[in-house]
Image (cartoon, rainbow, N blue to C red; front, side):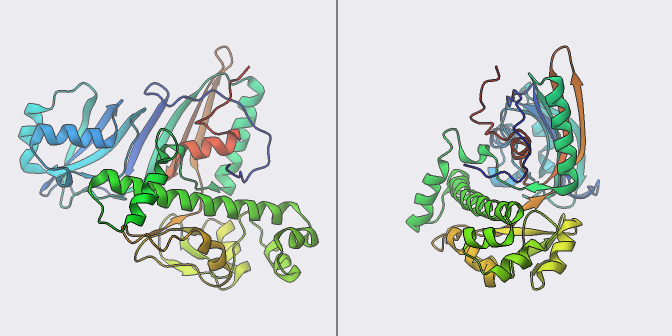
Length: 364
């Protein structure tokens, strides 16, 4: 069960992730050089995952999967625009053999280097919601604008965990087997397990922060079993998500990382959006939190995760460019917004709606 950071009442809406109602556009990390040995394609696709797109491009060109570069994975059940790179000598083969109507090449350019995972600033989303009454349309917009100022938890979305929501269990089994990972499917399953552990850690920190925000110092100390003086220091922090000594924070939206040594000083930089705390994606070669933060992170660090490289992930992000439109007659509500790379539109919508989009209740 996810813990939400905001305290407003649930806001009902009808959500379906389909090609007609869910739109994503990738924003490149940097301008392309317009010359070089790699062809860069800006591709619009419908009803097709990134893996399927790569498979289709491989078939059209004769290239191997690893020779086609991409910056991020996009869902099947959406209309998406993303960038793909391939060696430019295969341009003629692509033009001759690419025939599917599900793929439209919007632009072509060149670059000196291929695209790699993470080579994007973020994504622009446009999501069409239905059955939103006039009152809830206003409440949705107010909540979204508030989140643009104060930020949201950076949960992994339900899509990360497969159709049944339990792909992480397979990933755990593979990770604990000790064998070398075979192919992209096994890597995806193990990374789903990484994501599950991150979400569980984030859930615990949001719950902890909620107690510190809602309760007086004595009550919070009793509930959390923390020393009263520590609770008082934590409650001095102006932002919702409380930082602890030893937390690893990073400059936002990208930059250098550092350990929290002065909680209040770091908290003010966090509130201003200059830095954000990070959570562990457990695996090899990744820094761990220290001091008090280490004890909060340690239960979600699987030290048997030697098969995949670890990382740090922002725990808190700020949605931007939020614009909404509403049709009273049809009760159709459209929300446009931008999120940094690796963040999930569905996690943002769930924070507003206060319900799981995968198990959305029927609106009466």
